[in-house]
Image (cartoon, rainbow, N blue to C red):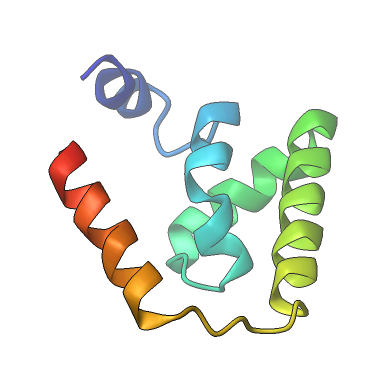
Length: 87
């Protein structure tokens, strides 16, 4: 709730928390133009956020180049069952 109030008074400007929250959408080109502009405005003046977004983008790219793994269906089902029991 505090973040929503803080964002209201910033008039659409992004801070480091906003950049962290929206970085995946930015990398995937899924930000609407107004948010993209605010994202880029913050990024242009914030070295730590530039480093974060750059590292995230590189990591996503590297993970995308990994070969796929075929998991045995029994193992997959066992993991899903354990996850459901844990919730």
